Image 1: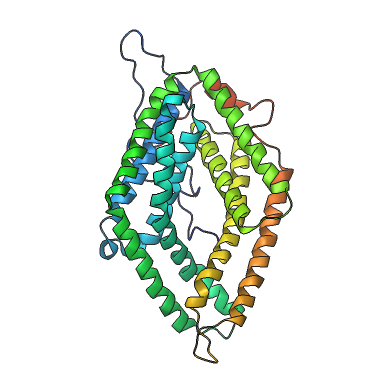
Image 2: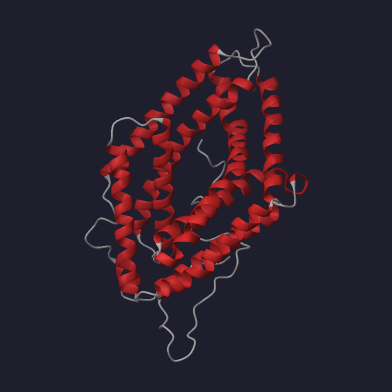
Length: 349
């Protein structure tokens, strides 16, 4: 199992955005000097507005607290993290004038801070629901009942810290920065004609794809390198998803699916690296009644080797597949978005 405990619209489980999203605004000409409507500009602005609406809705729901959220917390945390990363990927994809660089840097810094308690809570969700049961199967000496109880208590602490962070003024500031960036995107998009805008984005996506392929082809994937590779995969996948929402394309859909499969495979490896850190303080030996050590370490290594083998296979599959963005032509995507043909605006519900 990967980082997601179930398929949702946030992690690619459906083509439509989930219900409850903020309605997507459409650009309207203002005066005689206004730019003509553009499927690419208006569509990306709509995507940004919808994704921010999903962030705002999940933050509001999580701020109700553990008693109100209950069993929905893991999926809300998971989706919130994904939508934040989606909006940041779209922000990185768009043109970046020099006068807007400070906002971009501030956003990146504050998002990194805000993600820490969310990621810790998510790590415990995945460990308790998925990885710990697998460790118990791999190492019969682990006392499942006692270990799950200890892990649940640690998870409760991590979630309490996360709920506290959501009410922090600095977290409010991060949400405001996301709103500002979402609102500011329309002005940034309007500064270029659709064809020039599409070409600039395609070149950036092509560079990201080339950098990712270079990482995958390089020998050795230590923990830090794997982490950076996953960051690059997510950015490329979510930025590609934004354009896919505006223009259905089987080629682009296959490309995005390849990225999703690769992300899931590397996520499985990351889950087991995290387990090696969390398990020693939670897993209890049936034989001694004390914390398990040697057998637990061996089980973690065995499972991690299996996950790494799957990740290498996924990497080879991705490298064998053609790069959508490096191709000389992008077919329907280029025609609809660069040449101004009507695009499919994303659904808001």
